[in-house]
Length: 127
Image (cartoon, rainbow, N blue to C red; front, side, top):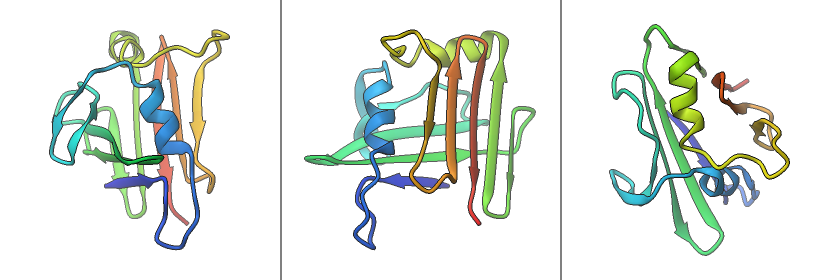
């Protein structure tokens, strides 16, 4: 499971979960983490939930399963959709105001999310 948190136990702050939460164009609903935003994906491929824990405190939990689209390894995960699946994912995000691709990388460089009409790609690699 990939966990992105605004406030880390070591006192560092990362805007990545808040940015993802803000770009998600889905309504809040109940989830296994409490009220949050959930991307609709085949449950056999990925679970993607972001929620607001408190003022300026956000968390995203992403679980990727080995499938035709996703691969998990020791300290790494990857999922990629193209075609209609990418378009379905793209429609669950607010586009950037300038029309550019959504490309979100966390402060450590371990997490990267790209969202375009023709590509949805998530990479995580922990050194």
